[in-house]
Length: 107
Image (cartoon, rainbow, N blue to C red; front, side, top):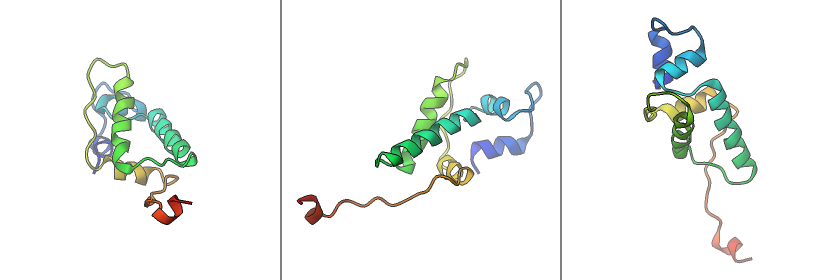
């Protein structure tokens, strides 16, 4: 289970508002706006013909979380965060990218 799901399962700590954004900032994972920015970037890169590998998505998320103006540094995302992110956003599709055949490359 990823950290976002674990934090939501734990309940709301005392003194934190009952919103997804407040919980996201309290537990150091992405807010809905930040997740939407990642989705837009991934879809744009796929449209340009340069899909991003799933193993690079957590580093993108960490960079976005680091930009947030809080007094505590963000923690790196867990190893199950990327698959959970893919499950939360069905508009993202995973495909295998294969190398171009050498005979087609020399055309």
